[in-house]
Amino acid sequence: MFRSILVAVDGSAIGHRALEEALAVARAMGVPVHAVHVVQTATYPSLTLNELEPPAIAQQALFDALDREADEILAAAEEKGAAAGVPLTAHKRQGHPGAEIIALARELGAGLTVVGSHGKGRLGRFFLGSTSSYVVDHAASTVMVVRGEPDVA
Image: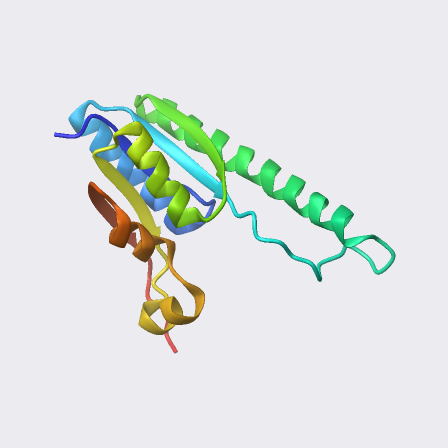
C-alpha cells in the first residue's frame, strides 16, 4: 500500500509518539521511514544574546543552535529506527515546516505522512498556525495525525 513513510520529528513528546507510530506501521508493512526535522528560517531582528552584540551575530548563533538541535533530534530518530529494525533516513530542511514537509513527501513519493498535533484546538490554530493542519490541507497522499492531549483552559 505505501512504499515509504515520512514522519515529522521536532523533539517534543508528541513528536516522539509520531515517530513510534510511523515505525510501527513501517515495521508491519515492511517499508522504510524518512524522518524530517524542519528548522524555521524566520528572522528574529530583536533577538540578541546581549545588548552589545549585533543582531546578525545573535541571529547566526540562534540558527547554529537550532541546527545542532535538529542534528540531535534526527540522530535520536535514526537510533529509534535502528532499534525497531526499520530502515530510517534522516532529512533536515529549512523553511516553513508545513510547506517543507509537503515538499519532501512529494519528492520521496511517500504514501503516508505522519505528524503530531499538539492539541492547541481551533483558537490556537487561528492565532499560532498549525503544522499538522497545514499538512492535512495540502497533502497529496494519506496523513496520520498523532494527537496530543488537548490544552485545558
